[in-house]
Length: 201
Ligand code: HEC
Image 1 (cartoon, rainbow, N blue to C red):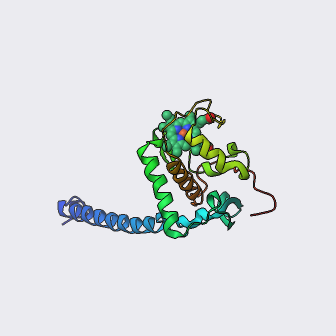
Image 2: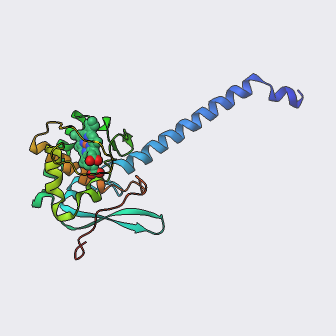
């Protein structure tokens, strides 16, 4: 058999197709395991929900050339420290509210959604909230009545009132705070953090 004929053989190409497909399948499985370990709550990039008890701020990471999240001292949301299961319950209420009210129709969360309204991934640290001391109160009144308590997030658009209960709005804020602690490799780009209180970190 000469070389040309060997390379044209059907069975050889069948074998190559089977090998390539099997290899890709293995790589896909390995990547899936790798991804799951990086997106699960309570892992190095995604802190567990009790992080809402702490101050979250961003520092420039020289090596990666991005702003990376740092979890600081105790700074409980609404001044009340929650244990792990209470924190999980509150963040979960926020997640369900965000899904039920379809916030992603207008906003983007962790890369999913629309760009009609600001990206919410780091909304907890948005400069639009003025300062850290008034942020929680302003967020709560904004979410409960965004038409009256509109702030300017630079879109020149208005958010409609979505009829949230106060508990749901608190859950949403907990969710936004937790989400801001996730290390997203610098996403969204060019994000600027709210002014930090000088004395504390
Ligand atoms: C119909 C579109 C629409 C929907 C749905 C919507 N929003 Fe908004 N939202 C907006 C717009 C527009 C703004 C920007 C207002 C401004 O620039 O003054 C905004 C602003 C915000 C902000 C402030 C942005 C920042 O950078 O901090 C938060 C927080 C927010 N929305 C949360 C939510 C949540 C939570 C939901 C779902 C419960 C939701 N929005 C649903 C349109 C929407």
